[in-house]
Amino acid sequence: MTSTPATTATAPTTDAVLVLSCPDQRGIVAAVSALLFDHGANIEESQQFDDVRTDQFFMRIRFSVSAGGPDVGRWRELFADVAARFDMQWQIRGVADPYRALIMVSRFGHCLNDLLFRWRSGALTMDIPAVVSNHRDLEPLVTSYGIPFHHVPVTADTKSQAEARLREIVAEHDVDLVVLARYMQVLSDDLSRDLSGRVINIHHSFLPSFKGAKPYHQAFARGVKLVGATAHYVTADLDEGPIIDQDVVRVDHRMAAEDLVRAGEEVESRVLARAVRWHCESRVLLNGDRTGGFSGRARRRAGARLLDRGRKVSGVAVRQVQVQPHVP
Image (cartoon, helix red, strand yellow):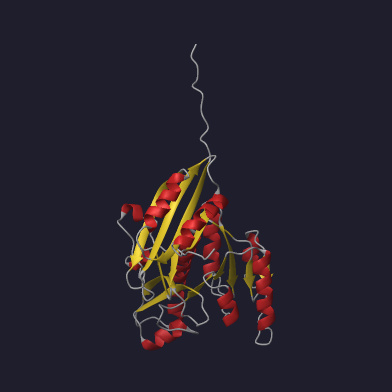
């Protein structure tokens, strides 16, 4: 008679990501590593960067703790002393705790459709508690995914009321991130400041070129050979926020302005999806009017580079995925 070996269930673990930035000085890595070690954490991924231009230090660590170890809330308490010692901006977030992303859109649905498909397929690990639009055109698409749709019309006379309703929706749904997926309204300065670092916009040009309205038509008038898209954080200055990601597609003289629009739609969707994914993986670091961060493939490549605010073309800087710390 043979017996079957007993199987032992794997003990559940707490997986978390720590991101931080602070003035550069000796001892930061040692202090963080010692804290994690002393409380039983295993470091699974660690990346850091020292920006000599601003004398700022940036770090992202993914770590795990076996059952019985500190949970995410307790880690925040434990880390507070180290953070205060080094004057850090920091965040600790559980890997299993997805960002809650509110998507806003007007009438162009390609970016929204792409985000919803990626979310449904599991390519974007986030929750979408609602979609807001100033038109009803895309309501059937949104409701087909079982997501609440909020129609918030905007006119010059009702803009303040519309933004008040938007603030209510953000609060009601406990929103971490607002994604402007071709939302063709400019947020007020006050709202942009209040949601600083929490709003990602897709602009349909390769910023800093062709800001404002109808960028493809501006590009056509200049006879450009490349058109692109830029995902950036929203600030009070129109199309001036820190750039997260960019990409381009080649065009030529045979194409009309409408052809440029169609060519750019796929690029817009791709760039916005990458920016949202990187933000939701805590891979985007804000550094003044620039962003920087760490690639998810950094374990197969030495180091990481801070990304310049200006240009991040696919195959070069665009592969440097980003991380954003928050002030707790």
